Image (cartoon, rainbow, N blue to C red; front, top):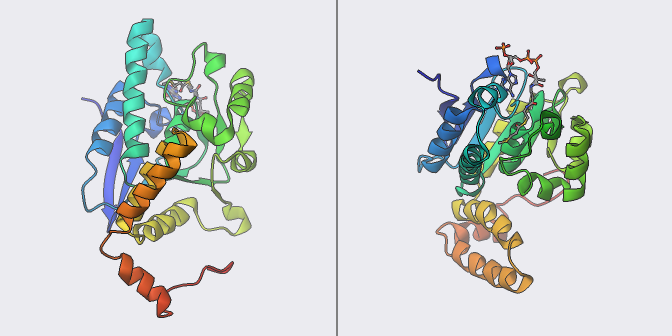
Length: 264
Ligand code: 1HE
């Protein structure tokens, strides 16, 4: 029997999804990717945000290289495996539920592809990023050419893949691979704590706004400017029909809402 790859708990509206294969540095085999696809395809309706984290010292070491080696897959077999990764990570990115990733240690290869599908990425000081596929004789197959390249630019991805070099957390943040760094040695709160704080904050947004943010922006990036602007207008019309919109606007009008300041 395959030990479950994901362990899931709930904290109010936040589902905490933990990669639970630390003995293999959370490497992803076929069963794991199927589990990811299945869970993110059926997020319970009361869940407003997912916090994705990982057990052990490393977020995710990517493709299970042992399984790949032992199965000696043909090109077509590996293409099918990659299509499974694409389906699974598409569910993460496009399910309509915001996903906050909390990372530590290695976020490499398919691990970086997994993190790239999340919407908000929090890293601790030990986090590092790499795309070592070139050094392993393979290529990316979990969506990096689309998602990671968009985050860091295609040119930077080419360089990272050609050299296989390790990008530390500070360079990674400058590239957009993480949005926050929690350095506990410098007095920052633990990354998991900040991740949960952000998840709860996001859960407090209007649900339709969150849905539009995580589904609309990336889709519009695939469109022409004309189509994108038209779609933006339609999304705005749909979102502003949400039931709590008037109440939220009223809170501002009646000076009950927070102001947007550097301190807020
Ligand atoms: C693994 C994997 C894995 C660890 N597949 N088993 N990814 C990589 O090229 C990264 C490969 N892994 C590493 O470089 C290192 O394992 C780490 C830096 C992440 C961690 O090092 P360390 O010293 O903490 O652990 P370790 O001793 O290397 O590994 C512990 C165990 O995890 C060991 O198994 P054991 O049975 O000997 O105990 C490792 O074999 C196992 N392990 N990483 C399988 N990746 C859709 S295409 C995506 C393409 C890619 O992702 S390519 C990038 C692959």
